[in-house]
Length: 197
Image (cartoon, rainbow, N blue to C red; front, side, top):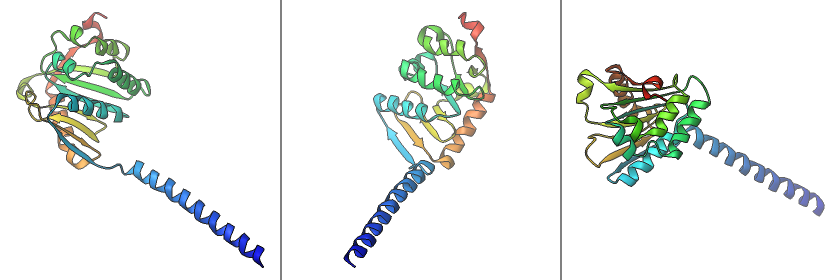
């Protein structure tokens, strides 16, 4: 009789352990499917650069960048080796993946962000760099968007304050729309041939 209780007890313990493991997997899967929303206001360049890396790293299908110039892109470290590698891995995975960049000024881009130009040479059909025209030239903000689910932005490019917002599609959607409007008011300014690479 005692052996019967031991067998039943062992069975119950194993059942509980299996349930715990199953629940842990389910919780992990749910966390992956419903990642926690992030909204952070930053005032330092170091925090802004870290936020840019976070947004680049989350991209699976697309990256959209709107900035002032090649100089500001260099200052924000877009073209540092680790960030270029994140962009390369995005593009190499599928020919339908895209990186779109709009700048107010593109002069000197080869000297300021040469690694980005090398990336353009390797992925000229997936990476586009354009310059604002018309009303878009009055825009004072800057932004980086990944997959329409993560954004780093500065409401005013010359002000230190920036904002990181991740996994909040409703809050990010207006900025996705804004980028598309800016993209429409821009023209191709840099190409593989124009860089001379």
